[in-house]
Length: 160
Image (cartoon, rainbow, N blue to C red; front, side, top):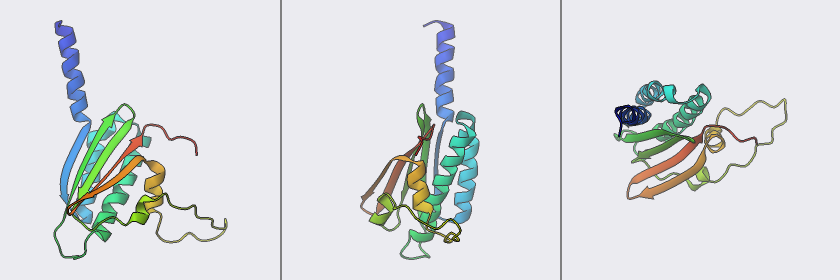
């Protein structure tokens, strides 16, 4: 291998390594907020602002759901494990936690909400609708007392 090729291979390897993010964090709001800030700093040089915005929105929804709804005992100390990797088709994400089982209704594609145009929107209940709409290959698995949620945020959104 020539020196130039070796340097190029090393640069590609380094660039790929910078496009990875992994964090183990306490399941609390401030840790989620700091993790999203750190994730943005790590991945934003590698993806468009649109992709980064979708990644942050989906991860904020998922991790805040874990914080708010993931414990039978609200005082129990819990951890969230987050991994994200940029690849040629988007950003792959995997989140694990040791909270309660994810309700099956969250995984089913949500029904469309038909609201009159002038009706006020409900306060909440849009999180899983957002998650389903912005992700591809959404998968959930539970083993022992751990939840694993994995998905891909595509580079381009397909017209609905």
